[in-house]
Length: 283
Image 1 (cartoon, rainbow, N blue to C red):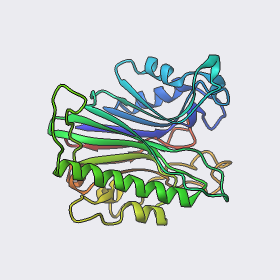
Image 2: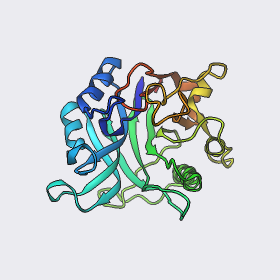
Image 3: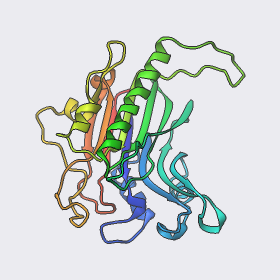
Image 4: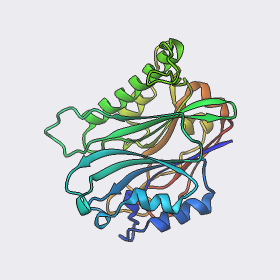
């Protein structure tokens, strides 16, 4: 079994306004430590969030048995003590990845909206039944134009990886040109910042080309007749005036659907404005 947890932790800021990464870690431990933990909104040396603390370093101390891979969407000067001022997504994994790629997502000009840089981290991990491509992301909220462009780029990355799997390049072992396969089987999770009945969700799950496995919503695949659990707005009614609804997802390639064992949401914790979501695969 492979267990993956995804959570937008809002740099550790709970609904009570207190920033506490230990509280985040306690929730994850109580729910059961996953094989892969994908976090969004992790801050590093940024004086505007958590007094400039290095949250990547702190999370490494809280989860010493995991390898950490940080994808900085923001990477700026002016960090605390002369460090880089960063903000982005973090993957913690018990499976040493074969390869890690960081993809900056597009932000086409949009003078009507405030926005921030976005990225996705892709890694290839080995499981007992073969290799799997795992992606962690956080999409734009304020600009639908940018959000749709980012979804299109994610679909292009999936198409590219599948094409490389079918038609691998030349292999030069023991050199920078050594070939590493990017498998067709893919899971992508994170805070997508769209709701299930949106154009963005429809684009994310639109049919791919005949050669590329479709991308499907794991919840709908597992529970087609069950109302989905909300992933934000349960406790924080100031930010989420809409009330409880869903913005956080697991999507996966069609060829993994039969391996879904469970998809769930922790709706009890208020340690962030979002809820942690969990996927269990038989791999």
